Image 1 (tube, helix red, strand yellow):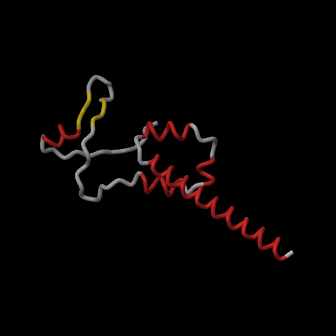
Image 2: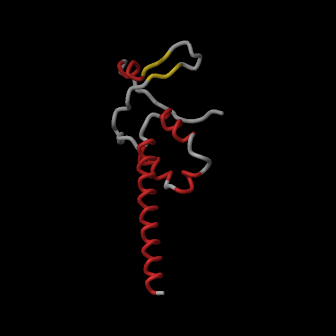
Image 3: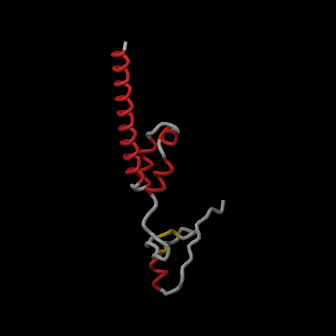
Length: 111
């Protein structure tokens, strides 16, 4: 009886270790996908069923770390291009800052 208990305990410990290694590998993969372009991340997430990643993995923590970036208070903003509201042209941040005028970026939703 003691041998059966020891054998069952060994199997259980091995199973838990295998599950932990698979969970860590999946977390590492999910983190690496989060660091890619949004289109790539969307393609991968579209293949994952339902709320699985949100329930099983520390999704929010991984997301906040993966998308944290390297900017700090006082750093210059990275250059980017945006379409005008009327879609007639594009504006580039570096064009505005080259004029020596301050630029204020307001992020929000107006819907």
